[in-house]
Image (cartoon, rainbow, N blue to C red; front, side, top):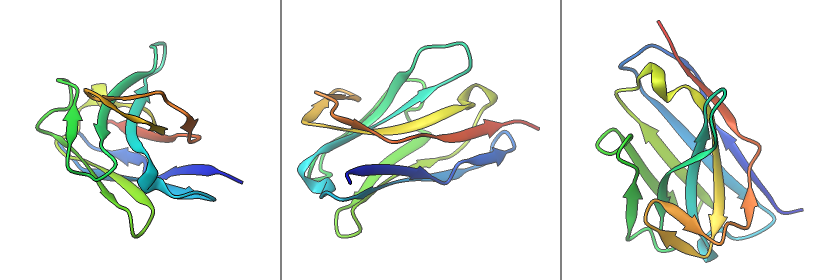
Length: 123
């Protein structure tokens, strides 16, 4: 069974940090570009970051640039999203997805999604 599983979410105070993981099972992640998305309550899902297959190219939405870092460890079949300086407006369910390549900070041709992990930024 092909699966993406996100983990690492939780409750954090403003200014804090979290590291999300996106692990693949049943297939090899290094064939894909990987994107992170988020969906806040009452809002549409938005792309926030994308990493190329090799990891040599990373892109970010303006809303997270300078605070979030996407990386991948193909040996561990996992992609990460390091989130620093978190703000209340970062509160959302975070998803990872596979794609054929990155079109800016969004994966092109999204083919598979994880179930999401909740991030809540609140004092």
